[in-house]
Length: 116
Image (cartoon, rainbow, N blue to C red; front, side, top):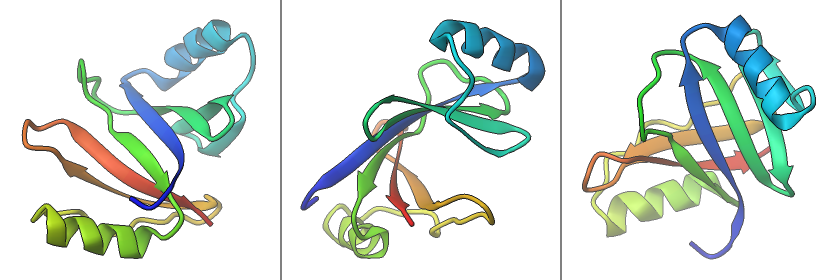
């Protein structure tokens, strides 16, 4: 990567309402960004985001996403140099970011994101 622009780490919670109450207490504040009803994130330090999403919790899983300046170019580079299968780049209306995920050799979920 030429330059990392940030990082995200995501956890899944099965009961979003209960989980959000817990995380609001943990961070002692409301989330900084709520993309939709089942997803929220807190900026812990500049360009470092802790995300909470509704889903099945998996211990030790992420994904950990690395911020990049050009997600398309970085995705293509990683597929070539590491022979990776990387999911298509995702976007969602109202979310000012694009992202994609892949796994390392051991099944750890990693990904990329770009602020739009």
